[in-house]
Amino acid sequence: MKTATGNKKLEAIIKKVEKDGVAAKGLIEDLKDLRETAKKEEDPLVTKVLRLTYEYLAENEAFDVEGQFDEDEEGNEYPIEVEQNENLLYLLNLLTNADHKINREEIKDYRTALKLALY
Image 1: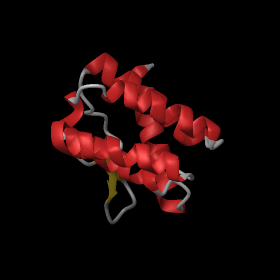
Image 2 (image 1 turned 90 degrees about the horizontal axis):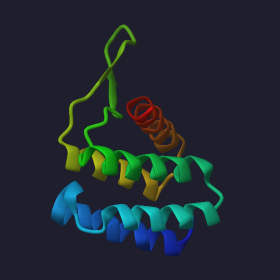
Image 3 (image 1 turned 90 degrees about the vertical axis):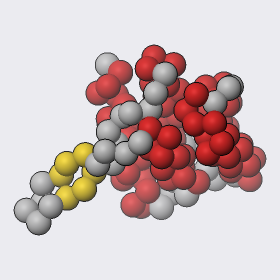
Image 4 (image 1 turned 180 degrees about the vertical axis):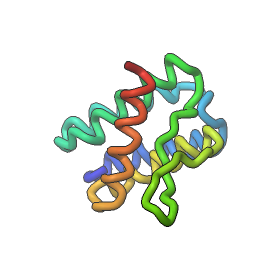
């Protein structure tokens, strides 16, 4: 997130997920509100991944999307299995510094995985 307002909202969501997990009360509404902030910040990647995230949560009542990958010596990528709360927390923490080059690449991986899972 680019603004103090966006980061404040994101930090509150992270704390909520740390405490109550992906089933936290009001999580989807909080993500929708954060998406509106991302729109104002004019960051289409963050805006899209937030929408896909709350759609996935609403549809699956979980966040078991495979968005993190590791690479072997030959350059083959394979998904890393991560517990769903940690998976969502990882994505949310990437969003705290979404302009960082490596974070953006990982956010794009989540965007792709979410799109494949939803559509």
